Image (tube, rainbow, N blue to C red):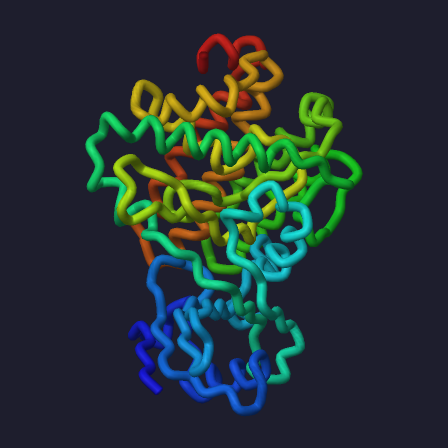
Length: 341
């Protein structure tokens, strides 16, 4: 068996599994006689460990994704792999673009971690391919992203909160709970979370504005360039795959990471996203909600940067969140609207 894990130190969040463990997983999934020819760890993900696995007798390779050890998972990121699995029946609008699940195992009987085995998506990760195209063709890529996001956001759900739960009756409850979870995680790693708690308190004060969102819609959670695949030979950037939908939520589409990223650099190729998605709500209430969502994103970014060992990036989140808090606490919704639009 050819085994190529990514070398990491013992303090890293992502820890590889062994060659013997991969063989044991494949015997569980494909039968006792399964023989692993090769297992190559892929380095694009920052949460799960992901391997391209070739099993003797199978025409195509498969992907093995292994979740972090349970005691390493943050409260706000608990059991993300199970959340993704629970989302699959709701995401048929993306079925042609998504990998198919071959097997999922939460039993910890083979290895002491959750894992998924999926079909292997053809294509090249967008960050590795998009730059090879002239920038004049990039708007077409972002229009495709807008179409995909629109399809996801069109899916209606039964409650607010992560797809696998916990479920909340109102959007404000889901948002406030997520902020307190992020704050608790920051406490747990020794980072200051006072500003995140202040945002949670402000969100609670504006629950009426948040609860104008009465219909839960699917949020992809992490859909952007890093999680799409491109055709390796097409003349124009062409999306052929979407992956890693483990942070799905039921809630307000405006709170999705995709919307945040599409709006991040106005006046660039990203503006084409709105051509296919539709233009966002610019009302005062929507702008106030967007400030709360941005604060939540920044809190989650602080946690992720800590996990990745990016100390300078962690520090930058305090300044960014202070600016958002100044908008939230220093202005009425109509005043915030005038300043942001």
